[in-house]
Length: 81
Image (cartoon, rainbow, N blue to C red; front, side, top):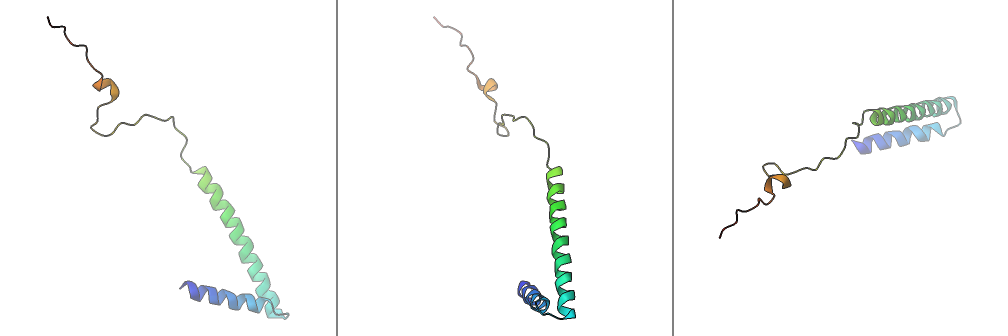
C-alpha cells in the first residue's frame, strides 16, 4: 500500500512540474495540502503537549507484598543473662 501511495504522489508531483494549466492547478493543490498538513501537525503537537499529565512528586515505590524499610527495621532484642 505504501508503494502505491508513493508512486501516486510521484505522478502528481511530476504533473505539478509541467508548465500548463493542469500543472499549475496540481502545484497549487500540493501547496494547500502541504500547508494544511503543517497546520494539522502543529495543532496535534500542541494538543499532545496540553494533554500531558501533570508532574507529581516522586514516591519511593516498594514492590507489591514487599515490606517497606520501616516494617523490616531491626527490633531491639531483650537482653538475656
